[in-house]
Image (cartoon, rainbow, N blue to C red; front, side, top):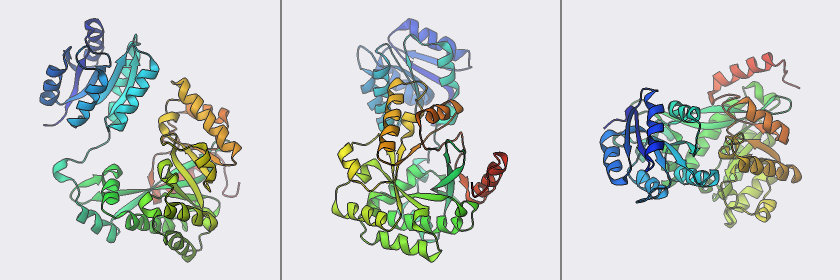
Length: 398
C-alpha cells in the first residue's frame, strides 16, 4: 500500500494536547487520527500508511522508545514528530535513537510548544524524506558489480568553502547510481550492498578514476583539492596506498591535492592493516580527514595518534546549532580542539546563513552544505564554480 499524503496519526494520552495538534494539522489540510492506546495505533499505521506520526514519549502502556522500536520493525517511513514534557535532553536522546533505527524523524517539540513550530515540522517533510527503493525492485549484487565494471556509476561534487575568505577550496566527490530500469538508487542502498559483498575496493577505484579525470580538467585543479571517501574494507588492503599514488601520478596530480575521508569509527580501527594504510597514505603526502566526527567513540588519545589533516564535524550537531545549547558547546569544543592540534575544521550540513555566521564566529575553517551548494554533476559544478567566483570577484589564484 502506498503512503497516504497529508495523513497524521497522533499517539498521545493527553487529550488536550492531541486536540491542539489535530486542530493545527487540520488547518493544513491533514486527515487526523488520534489514539491513546498503542495497539489500535499500530493497526491504523499498517492500514492507513500515514505521511506523519506525532508521538508522545511518555505513555502509560508503552513508552515512546518502545514505540520507536516497533515503528522501525514495521518499516515505517512516515515523518515522525516527537513530543514530551520531559525536557530537551530527553527529546534529543530519543531523536538520536530514532535516527539510529533508520526512522524518518523531522523534529522534536518540548511541551508546551508553539503552534508555529508544529506547522513548520508538518510542512517540511517533503524536503526531509529520502526516496526509497521499493523492495521488489531493489538492486542485486550482480547488477551493482556490472554497473561498477562498466563504469555506469557517476560522480557528483559538493564544494567546501573557506568561511573567512569565501573561496571554494575543495570538492567532495560522491557516488551516484542511475539504473535504466530501477531509476535513481540512493547511496544508502548501494553502498551497504557493496560493503557486504566485497565490492567496495572496485567501487572506490571507479570513483577515484572518475574524480581524477574530472579534476585535471576543472578550474579547481589550479588552486584547490578534492576529497573521496574510504571504507574500512578498503583500508585493510595493504596495496591501497600504492594504487592511489600511482593513479594520481599517472595524471600528474600531486598527492596533497587529494583528501581521503574516513569515518570516525574507521579512523579509530586499531587493526594493524588499517593503521598501516592510513600512515602510509599520509607519508606519501595525501591528506586524511575524519568524517562524521562526534558520532563515534574515539578517545582524544586515539585521535592524537592519528596522522590527520582535517576533522569534519557531523551535520547532526551543525544543523542544531541554533536550537541546542549542547550542540553549540560540542561544535565549539571540536573547533577549538582542531585548532589546538593544527587541524582544519570542516562543518557539514550548513543550510542557512545563521549557522554559517555562527561557525565563522567560532573560528571554524571550512563549511559544506546546501546553503553553499547541493552536490552537482561534474560539468555543472565547474560552471557553478566559475559563476561563483565571478559573483564574489574571486580569481583562481587568490
